[in-house]
Length: 150
Image (cartoon, one colour):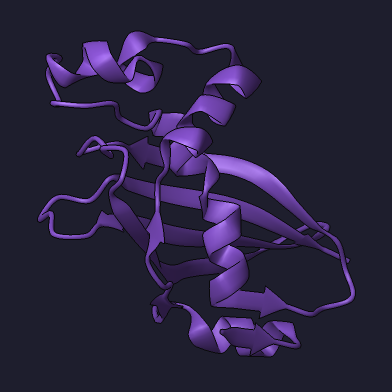
């Protein structure tokens, strides 16, 4: 994990890869819990028997479940220990090029792409690529924007 204790360290890291996480398995229990939390109970996510004859040969994770893992992955990649608050400002771009089958293992690589001045502090843009073990296409590619205030 990379630790940044001031904005100068973050500025020096722009354009560099922050790191890659360990692999984590996507379980049916996690998919079911996400379905309950979001009220998205589409059969391709939760009906194990029906999904066996579906387009993916089994259940798959929700795309938004995959996206929602970014904060967890990020906690393993970097720590920003500045005095100001950090706010999730949103996403510039998100794509889900490859479905995540239940039982697959994922890992994430982050690259700090920009750090720009805003009136209240800095705007940080980080690119995340979530890979599926053994697959050539990633599960998710996302560009996240965070405001570093104060």
